[in-house]
Image (cartoon, rainbow, N blue to C red; front, side, top):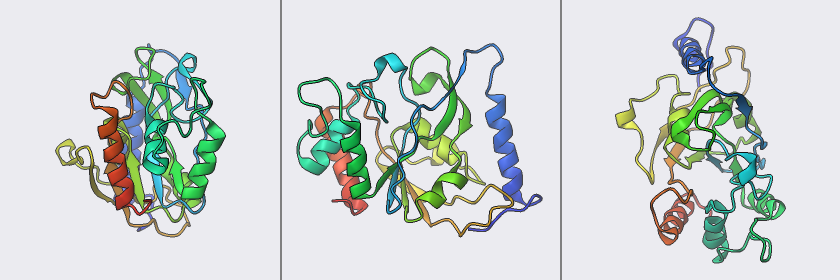
Length: 235
């Protein structure tokens, strides 16, 4: 990808995007929160999962991505890769094993990085609808750590919107990929002084939410993710 300079359109687009993010912050809202979990970045990863923000800490069953026991993400992974929805579950406890999940992701080359670094919960919960993004993910920092990644996949509409607004020329919402669809993701370095190698030709898939609030049966969610992982060569 072409590097930007202080006066070229990419740099100006970045400045405009920064302005947009900043303007979303309201002085009379609640506290700004920083995402509590570090990205999982296997150096040989070829795909990267990108969600938004976890629930409040009282809903956590573990200190790891998708920590709510009633979110079906790790059941889906267990079923897709091991034909066992309880593969990552800890015995009879209502929690998953973060170390087992992390080891699996390194073994299979699957990264996980949220699209949101800082946010405000307008209604005190993890609803994407009421999440004000303060600071989005810094892909200039993340992508060089996973140089083999060619596919990004989001886990819902909000994460998709955030990533597409990081592009030098964000598409109109009518052009966003629908659930289970993909599009080219022509990311360009946003730091004018960035000396890193060019970004891969990335593809962005929009996957469905694994929240129980998403109105789809678990077996259909599993089927959608299984189809995706087959497409990207993980199955």
